[in-house]
Length: 462
Image (cartoon, rainbow, N blue to C red; front, side):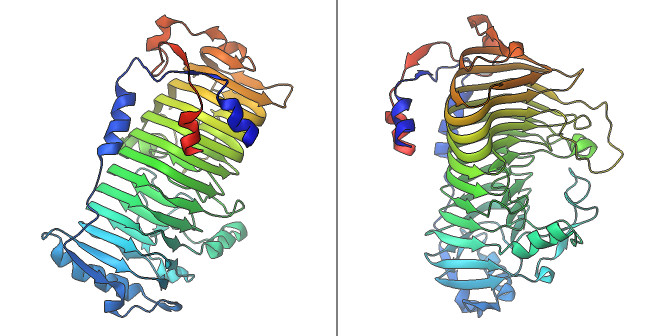
């Protein structure tokens, strides 16, 4: 790591000046999105009979406490305090104007009895459970149609104890799709911060059909062999800020989604204005992914200050014929990689469909993707960028990328078009046209000048 840090200062990095004001908007928007953490009313979960011994099931205590606190929703809201202890529970619902606060050494444990995770309807943008037809198990911490919800604390922990679900998946004994650890639906004004999330049965944090979401200073950990334990999956949501997180899981660290094939097309709610900053992590899959469920569209994604290590892929876009939708206006910058198999990967033939009714002529539009200011050591392949025959991915722009690559064939590209500048190893032929000023409208937020930057900015967060 010392050699890698030292090398940062000797690279020419592109300045953050851009053709669009959106880069400035994204940072200022996230900084200004502060939700209410202090409430005028507060109760402890122990006041409702909860026992923090790790054995007693406290589902009723959580449900009763939150039912009681609902009476304060129009009086400034309320806080449910979870003190130190191991609080076993099944799924419970949140309410609007609530702060769920986990004290230091407080651990909410997910029950290992599947009956404590009741069933809910499939998401309309998916048409069925993601793993099996029919419904799906409800998340441990769940809420829908909410406003002003805060899940935070003094570095408390939520542990899904997901091993029983992983075993069911591996043994093909699931009856319904596995539950997430946290899922909020159709909600506005959400803050999740200062907590650790462990061992989710499925995706860890899943805001779906949400707006104005901030996820800040969280740690998410699951074993690298745990199936589909994605970290944070914004899904058909807008104005989402994910900042200063450490994630180490068995699947994508962050995966931006927006519905599955015809169901997502018909539902028609895109994910947009997604800002990711200060992500550190490792995975057997991708660091930052878009898709493969992106049928409602994904746009205006800005990711910066990313450090991915000991991972399979750093940046990935996944899609397929039948998805429809679009991925456009994606800007990724200031990325450090160490011991990564593939730095950049686009997959146009990902497959996986909810049923046989998908339209194979519903082709996705992938355009205006800019990746710049990337350095990497011990990278096997620079890029595996594969579009779809008859549906070329266009305006893929690579700039100021320097990778120490071990493969003799660093790039493999097909059915893509774009531009590059200051890329080593030299980009593949379809992306080898040099970026020039007139490409400002083709490349997402293409910077208009080059400057030398030292390593002070990087040293502050690595």
